[in-house]
Amino acid sequence: MLELAVLGLLKEQPLHGYELKKRLGDTLGFLWGVSYGSLYPALRRLERSGAIEIVEPAPATPIPSTGSLTGDLAAARLRHRPLPGRRTRKQYRITPKGEATFVELMVADGGAGADDERTFALKLAFCRHLPGPERLAFLERRRIELAARLDRAQGSAGGRGDRYLRSLMEHRTKTVERDLEWVDELITAERAAASSAEPEATEAGVA
Image (cartoon, rainbow, N blue to C red; front, side, top):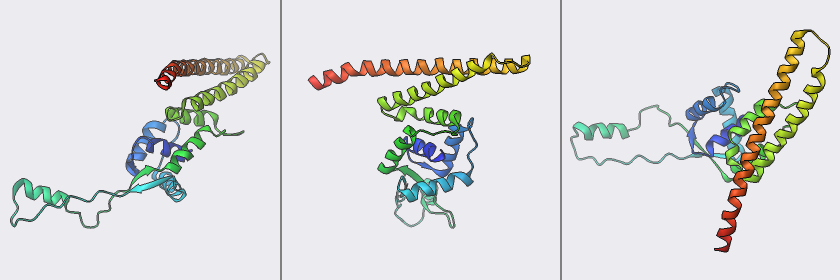
């Protein structure tokens, strides 16, 4: 899912590899560590597929030579002079194909065996980039998953076992219940936002 995270960040603005790593760490640090060894291969895969492209750096504005340079003018000219052996950092931006790939990854079902918690947290972090109907469908799918998980947890909570095992089962049940309440609140807010937007769209169409 690293490609999804990269595309989500590049939807906001073009970024260098170093900036991407820092923002990925800020956004996903609680999920997994992102190293250059995993980031740059992901960038190359996305570039080969046409989902991202390298932004060509703007040429430096030349400063005309007028003979002897002193003071601030000399310092400015030195700043614009490329340093020997210094490589320009690549800046990446998302392409139209990358925009479509981002939506496909966001709405894709992870399937059985997927890491539900990490995948959901990652997608929720970029959920604002989805259109309203897709956001609502994403949250409703999560609610279905949690409701099924709650049924299973409640079914096993009454089983036999020592007090530690029973306590663990009760903790899992309460955790799923809290997650379900949280997702219900997100769904309610999403529906309210959609309802408030409908009259505005109708008025704009009449006008």
